[in-house]
Length: 175
Image 1 (cartoon, rainbow, N blue to C red):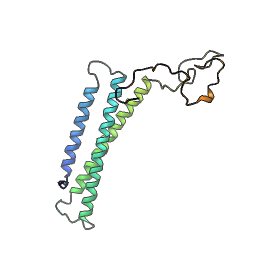
Image 2: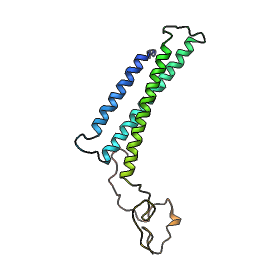
Image 3: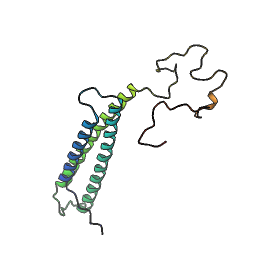
Image 4: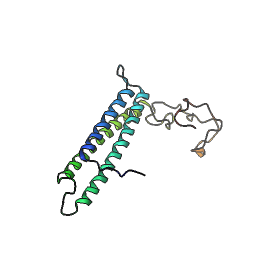
């Protein structure tokens, strides 16, 4: 038998928000080195931490929204309090605003990390000589294409002979 879900108060949501902020802070401290500037892997780990923290924060926000909806339904149009004071809805909305503020701040930090990662690691899809790649192609050479072969018709196809991967495979995902 499943126990009925306990109604959470605004204070419960405030505490959950604080716990999530602390947990995200601890995870970021673990992901980022204190003694030196972070490298690409540490920045990527920090971005993953913020992505996960945002996921959990949004879940808390959805739970809070459901709680507010059920409170509004219980109170009805006359705002009669059944088990909660008339200011309870205002407290829930204040917590919702706090959750949105934290989410905006974390999204901004995550975007900053993404921009820094992009700056440090150029995209793999760029061809030598394309604008922004920083490399020139000598006249008469097609960047990476073998002599006498038209590569334009092979867009999206695998190379004729598989080459060795540029980096070791990720331990997280097979493939």
